[in-house]
Amino acid sequence: MKGLVVSNHLWNSSLFRAVIGSRLHDCEFVVFFDCPLGTAPAAHVEDVVAHVWHVGIQDLDIYNVRSERELAEEAVSGAHAGDLRLFETGCYRGRPTFADPSRTLMLVRPSTQMRLAAAQILLPQAADEAVPA
Image 1 (cartoon, helix red, strand yellow):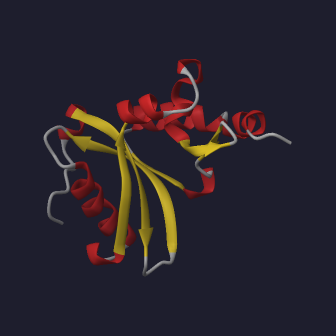
Image 2 (cartoon, rainbow, N blue to C red):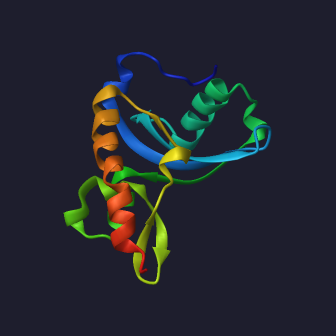
């Protein structure tokens, strides 16, 4: 598995998010992942997901690779929304839309998993508030 880092190097990493589809499994997921500093995020997540999903990298479509900082800066929600901004996938009528929790994969260290899970719990409430009835 070329490029996969499974050692303590993840402690010197950054959080990223990508949208990844598999032609073989006919699915698409929002994927959060830790990427070691100095490593190309798209190539890193490609290696990790290909291994986890048991597919060749040629069967994956990876796009919208964004760092945590970029996601926060591009979010429709303000700073008050905190980590919910990391789950924003777009905007509808001026209000944020969010990643479907059933289509979200977190390939991150435990502390980041807990942080993202805490924000993800708020998604149903945030979605109700964001989309007009």
